[in-house]
Amino acid sequence: MPFLYEKEKVSPERSGVEPNSQRQSTHEKQTESKNPPTAHARTSSFWPQIYRRLGFTKAYNFWLFLVFSTGMLFFTLARLKYLDLDGAFARGVSPGDWYYYRRGWYRWGIAIHLFCILPVGLLMPWQFVPKLRNRYMPLHRFSGYTIFLLTTIGNVGALMIMRRSFGGGIDSQSAVVVLATITEIGIAMAWYNIRKLQIDQHRAWMIRTMFYLGAIVSTRIVMPIAVLTMTWVNSYYSVMTCDQMRFIFSQDTDWSKAKPRGELERLYPQCAMQNGTNQDWVAVKANFEFGKPEGIGAAFDMTFGMGVTERLRRISYKRQLDAGFEKPGSAGTTIQGWGDAPEWTPPGQRTSTGN
Image 1 (cartoon, rainbow, N blue to C red):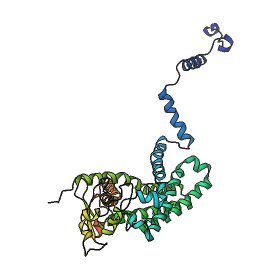
Image 2 (image 1 turned 120 degrees about the horizontal axis):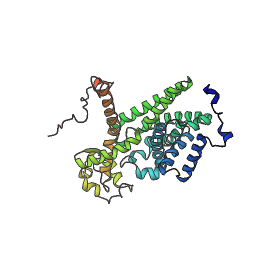
Image 3 (image 1 turned 180 degrees about the horizontal axis):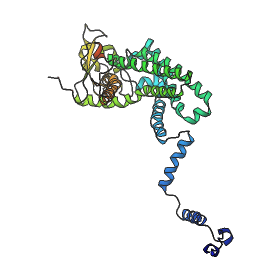
Image 4 (image 1 turned 90 degrees about the horizontal axis):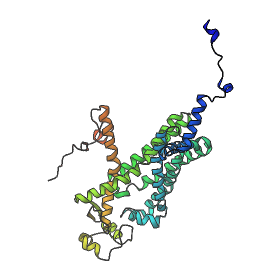
């Protein structure tokens, strides 16, 4: 029968012949030694090693952390010099604000705000590093309670100075109240959820709170663009008191040098009137031009509130429009629904009402 004549199968080890798998692996090793990994291959393997060492399991989480957390960290580091109130802060603050901040209630308010919020900006990013959180849980917990306490006290300081901060207009005051409220709600919700061991919601609310606190960073990006736009339009005005203007003209700051005596009266004659007082108001053109500190201060005063509220309003409009709301941009509890404020219209649909 045929099977009686089949040759005996000899194993590769007995025959002395190298198996195909071994020959293939040997060939691959030889090929790798002749062709080392390219720069692209080394780079593509470098970043996974980095974010895995930090405890991240997904690349996009690492990149989001890198962009937003380091952005907040570097912004905070750049502002640490402002803890010197009478030095760097007095020279670098928006022209006109130091007139109020230099003494009394507002000095206490800005000091409380800076000395509490800047440490929060230094601590917050490290809370989102998984490896640090998992390995040093007591430190993570202590840092979280510290952030909670300092944020609350820092918000109190912000509310103390909002009447004079960046001109103290209704838009600026509204922005401060909104940011203080939502950060307190966010951090309280994070604390409540971690007490209930609802870790997913704790993490979600802490991320929200971090972005609420980071709104001031994006505002610093919006404000220069708005200021340059106002300078180009060249028809926006703010108001300041003569006493405030006299103080601005007498100071050496990062924005300008002190003006010679009589310069204020020459540029703003109403401040030199015999029957005038230091509390008389003068119209100041918003103009970002070095050497004209009153114009720079007016421009910053007019754009701070807009940088926060208008940007968030546009985001609300886009999301409500995509969701099919009846009044996108004003579907929630906006001032138009509660008071007699003019109807808000989205960008691109606004018409000029000027003469």
